[in-house]
Image: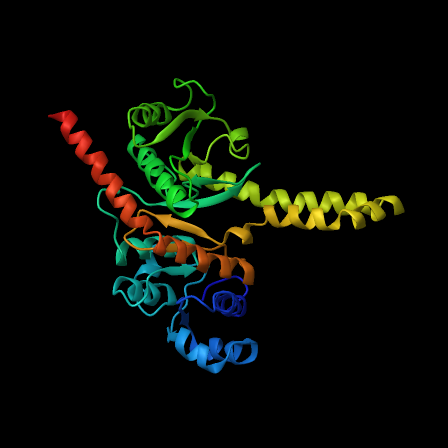
Length: 339
């Protein structure tokens, strides 16, 4: 519940995930108003009744958190689909929680009902950006408007673990976003974070990077505070519509443009898909003691399906276990150095 387009794309996305994973043990629990969910299931499902019975069920929730609700109020609404879903996760009845609902409510409720991983000061919302070769993991993109140097250091550790175990790259390269590559550039917080990262051998820190480097594939993980990260995320979302509008205008100028586009259609389709946020699912909330993936409110079927698969990968690869282990090593090293 709580998405911009109602329950239909959420239900269809869940069914699509199950349909594409018929040979896996993936199961989905849809949490929300049964009266709205069941008719969509009855109308849309191409899966057999036997498969649906074994791999999908509906958990009724009376209440729905809207995009206009305040996060602090949403936490106390115990019958909302967000709180009911997170309680299922906390109790171990589900392994992960995916939501296209109110981001602030999901984050606040996750902190209340799941808590933080040991050693984590603040969780971070993580987003995947396409780059020239693969993808760049960017965090934080909205959970923490203001950060301390220790927060940025922890974001780097968590982002590295996510990249290493979900995206399968050993020792991913980490960059700290600043206004210059020199360690002395940026705010006092960024300068202090640079020193912390440079002193931590567990992080493959390549130094400060600038905004142009996020999409260049020169780094794998980019760390920043949530204020800057959210602005970058929202700006990135505006790029594809602009390119499509410009291209459409040029196509309509003459017949030769239309012929050229027709011949390039497969290439243009692949390029568009690589820039579509729906290809990457949702944004993992790293640092909470559970697997939480936050989706865009406008998420369609493809985005929901891929968010479910992303949550499944986080569970299978035990990302939280690796983050815990890494923080234990960092804390042990700090204790040893202090002694």
